[in-house]
Amino acid sequence: MQYPEWIWQNGKIMPWAEATTHVMAHALHYGSSIFEGIRCYDTPKGPAIFRLTDHTKRLFASAKIYDMVIPYTQDEINAACREVVRRNELAKAYLRPVAYRGLGGFGLSAETPIDVAVATWPMGAYLGEGVLEQGIDACVSSWQRVAPNTIPAGAKAGGNYLSGQLIAREARRLGFGEGIALASTGLLSEGAGENLFLVFDGALHTTPVSAALLNGITRNTIIILARANGIEVVERDLPREYLYLCDELFMCGTAAEITPIRSVDGRQVGAGKPGPMTQRIQSMFFGLFDGSTPDKHGWLEMLDA
Image (cartoon, rainbow, N blue to C red; front, side):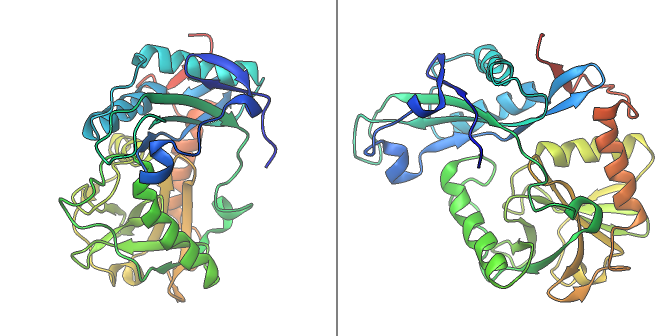
């Protein structure tokens, strides 16, 4: 990875290599961090951070769930995101705001300082070059998502991604592009770090937030764009075998964007390539950044705002 020159940590911009934390920080030992993944796109009007305000709201919601008081306002975090992109002179970038329990105590309930950082770096297609056009081969993981009332899946917390690591690494080890997880109910949940959409008879079907998944901002974007364009969207419980029976299948997320799935567990999905509905959703989504899809919701937040 080519690291950028500058990063924002605890209220100021500093050189990347100087943004450090102690090896005994609470977050390193107990997973007590919350974070966001955000993309900045190069639009005809200049670099714009996609749904920055919504991402920051979710960061603070995750902090509330874990009783973490972030020592900055949402506006200050938004300003830090803009500043770190500007200082690194990036037009397209991925951003990672993170807040975590730092050094100050070693018990599970220890009161520690809450440290905050915002990093940014260039990122292409998350799951590999060409996957947005060609699709990936996925598998259902042997690892399930957490059960209700154990670890809150609705928080974007660092510890939650131990589950995602198991799912993703198993899939790579077996030669697949990504893994898909079932919930503790045995019904579909989501990918290692992505939400799922299945296409049946021209309608989008997606698993509900009660299926141990993160309510993704890209997921929400797709639902809004689809319904605005006359596409039916159904949020429902879905059994595993529907992955094999659907007409089309794709996963989505800030990093993965809109990634088609051409097979699951070696079974071809639909025609075995990105289908017309998936391509239509891709066109509407990426059209937000080239100007062909009107930004009716103010989702593109310019760096100079």
